[in-house]
Image 1 (tube, helix red, strand yellow):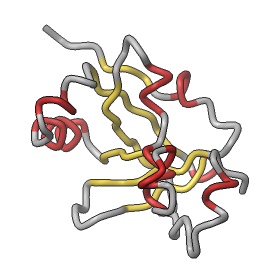
Image 2 (image 1 turned 60 degrees about the vertical axis):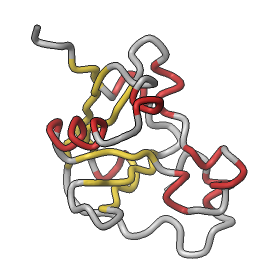
Image 3 (image 1 turned 135 degrees about the vertical axis):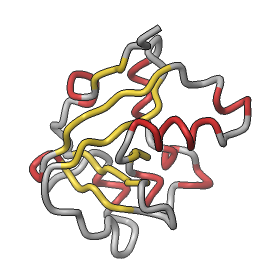
Image 4 (image 1 turned 120 degrees about the vertical axis):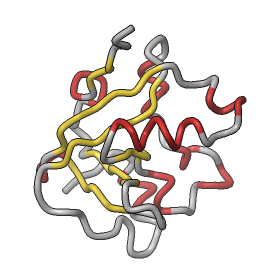
Length: 127
């Protein structure tokens, strides 16, 4: 499976970790005015480039979990996001790994040909 940013992932031992099997609906914080920028992994920053999880995308297994974690961030980071987007991720789309010590957090490593912009759907506010 050829993943997005594979050339960087290959430099890290045991990266990525095992994928969860089966379709999974995942949610991600996004800026709907700069959607493309919302899918850049933090691994592009030199201080994170050797961290496996930094080359995947931080996601959550529920909208409520995504909102709760976003609200726990500092105000300066929260200002970068103005929406939540979701996507049903299948096994063929990439690797989805339950990561960290929070069971609702997943790191998604998309395949190189996975269209993030068109597959993740922005949830419009109901207000």
